[in-house]
Image (tube, one colour):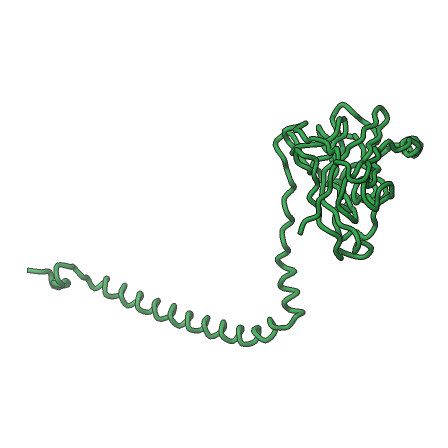
Length: 270
């Protein structure tokens, strides 16, 4: 026998209190369903109003402005070396007279007879954080492999003032043992541009953000600084070498305590 206030429901015991709970649950579900229908209706109205506005250019620009493009990460070679953003490096304190002294040194670039082989320097690793470098040091140029060949782009319109100049990205690095100014100058050693200022630059202290082929101002010399503020332990400067023709080229690097000549070959890509 079941007690008078209980009934057999397939083995489940249901009391009058359980019935009242079921009624409350039904009412709650009804209210939740009603609220959901109201929320959906509000969303539909909002979309109908905002959709035409979202198609306006000014609205799209405002939306894009809320989600700016993240800045690219800094380029890091390894745990102890980094390619610094020279635009944020310390301002050089080298005296103007020091640069005048370096400019006064004569260029000692070799002269090549017509058809002579280009005596390009052989690259080697001078610091594991960089690729093969050419030069005797303490200043070197990275970016010409082990055979001293610069694979450059041929002259093409890249920006105002640069339509007749090709070029390629390189990296000038300075050994930690040297602290002071470094002046880079050079020209082509063969062909129709031999002996002229047909080798120009972008970068260095005069163009801290200028190592780009769209930079309109080309430099006849590249000023560098062996201060660790420009990279520790090896100060380094991204730079573009700019030229108008393939062939054999030479760069002279002068510092307070050294002078070195680097010869390399330029090959234009297709």
